[in-house]
Length: 153
Image 1 (cartoon, rainbow, N blue to C red):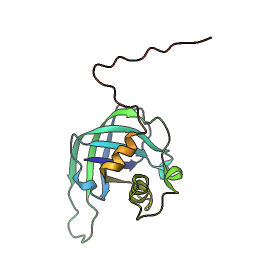
Image 2: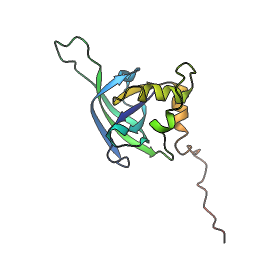
Image 3: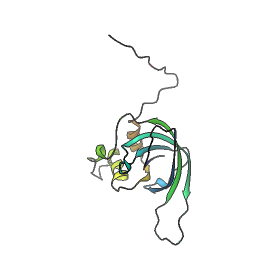
Image 4: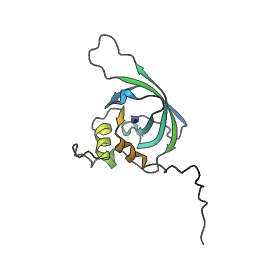
């Protein structure tokens, strides 16, 4: 399963990230080591939206505080960055996708990440994960050679 996290990310080019006690919503509490995760730099914290794709290297549930009836489950994550986003995707780009019943991947992202301003970890449907994958370089086949650029005058 794929996940997304919206959190403060100071340096999207860092090779690894650690997120402590992050709120989870929409299945985010099921995140585990080995899962794909899309990293959104929170616009509330000065970020720009989708910045990177990574793989979860560790995930641990945070214990609930005794005596508090309603608590949002939280997780702490370590993530290894795989690649950087090639084009922007954030609140501004997703704002027009607001028909919550249309089942479009962009609408799912707008709903899960931006309907509430909080930073969080969310689970993604396969169509939403495929949509986000389009913001990154396509994977090359193992036997495909990189194309050497040719320069023209």
